[in-house]
Structures are given as C-alpha cells and as structure tokens.
Amino acid sequence: MTEAISHHGKFLHPHRVFTAFKWLVYILLAWNAFQFFQEDLAASAVTFNHRISWRNVVEAFSASIDTTAWLALLLVFEFETAIFTDEQLKGGLKWFLGVLKAVCYFLIVYAFYGYLNKYLVITDLLPLEITDVCSLVGTQWNYVVSLDDYLPVDATVCAAIQGQELLRVSGMEVLGTREAFDAVWGLAVIDIINAGTWLVIVALLEIEVWMQLRDLLTGRLLKVNKYLKGLFYSVLFIAAIYWGFEGSFLDFWDAFLWLVAFILIELNIFQWHEEVEEEHSAG
Figure 1 (spheres, helix red, strand yellow):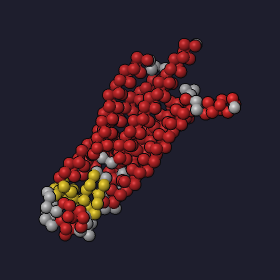
Figure 2 (cartoon, rainbow, N blue to C red):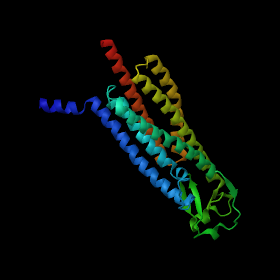
Figure 3 (cartoon, rainbow, N blue to C red):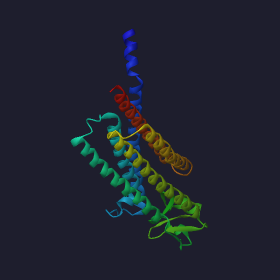
Figure 4 (spheres, helix red, strand yellow):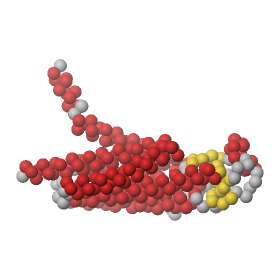
C-alpha cells in the first residue's frame, strides 16, 4: 500500500503535472491551427474564387501561416528554456534552432503583411448597384457574415437583407450590409493589433533568452521586462475579450490558449534564471 501511494505521488509530482499541462496546451494549439486552415480554405474559395497563387496565398491563408509559424516558434522556445541545457545549446543544435527561428520569424512577419493586405482588400468597398438582391440567388455572389464567414446569396439571405443599404467588396462578388462590414473592419483591425503586439512580445522574449545564454540576464532586467511584457499581454487580453464578443469562439479560445502558452514560457525563463543563479551561488 505504501509503495502504491509512493508511486502515485511520483506520478502526480508538481513538475510532471506542470509538464503535462504545458503539452496539453501545445496540442490544443495544434488542433486550432488545423481549424484555422479549414476556415481559411473555405473563406479563400469565396474571396479569391478558387484562384490562389503564390502572390495572394498569404492573404488567403494568413491565419493558417501565422498560427503554424507561431506554434513552431513556441516549441523552439520550449526546447531552449526547459528541455535542453545551456551546454547542449551550442554548435550544430544552436545553429539548427537559429535557422528554424529565422524561418518562423519570416513567416510571422509575412503573415502580418497578409493581415494588412486582407484589411485593405475587405475594406475596399463600393455601393452595390444592383437594386434587386433576389436576382443574385443561385449566382456566385456571397453574403459576408464575418471576417472569415461567407454565405451564398439564397432566398433566406435575400429576404433578410432586401431593402437595406448594401455594399460590395471591390473586384469581388461579395456583398453585405454596412453593419456587417463595420464588424468585419473591427475584426480585421484586431487581427493587425494582435499580430503586431505578439511580434513585440516575442522580440522581448528573444532578448531574454539571448542574455540568459550569455549569463547577462539579471534579476532587475528580468523584472523590468516582466512589467513591460505585462503591458503588451494586457493588449492581447483585451483583443481576446473583443473576439469573445464580436468574433467566433475559436478566435477567443485560440487567443486565450496563446496567452497561457507564453505565460508558461515566461515561467520556464524564470525557473531557468533561478537555476543559473543557484549554480553561481553554490560555486
């Protein structure tokens, strides 16, 4: 009985529970990346009429590219701050992780550019010159519900929007009410703010990792960086709340999971710094 309790205690050791929780969050983020790909695929079929080329792929799949690159970068941070030792983070492994990071950063910045372009595309509006919306039933025209949600113009949509002020996306067979496009505008702006804020946070994290590997990170600098990043995390939390009210549950849930994931990375860095400080004290 005592041995069973001891074994159970080892299994529920706080470090093991913490590690299991971290990887559960990472797996959930991977599942979200797949769902974003499905959303992008459906939305791009409407906005780009199945005509995707290398020039507009970032506009069509900005969320998928962004999420996948961030997930890979998150795993690199996990390996650097919690799995590999300082001695292991040298030589070939150091260069491999550096190249992988460079690719991730390129894709993240590329996705940020995609969010900007998507905003310009979806907010380039013209008055709809067709007076009888019901004449579009059965055609290629679609009605915008949200930023990545479009419905074919059918009898139900026609009855709901007939007689309202309607706008269309320039160069596309996409129409909607002014209220719907106002909501799309807000979500597109939040996408840009969210992506830009994450770029700042990851730059601060990169500085911390770089300084820690060179034994330059002091407790004072770590504390200053913590408060600075806290400000940017607050912006991301506000964006998550906005998505909770104006966007889809997937947007809110994904934003929440990313906040949790990077808070876990922050804890990794704090623990890493404490271990190095303890080694210096013992030496």
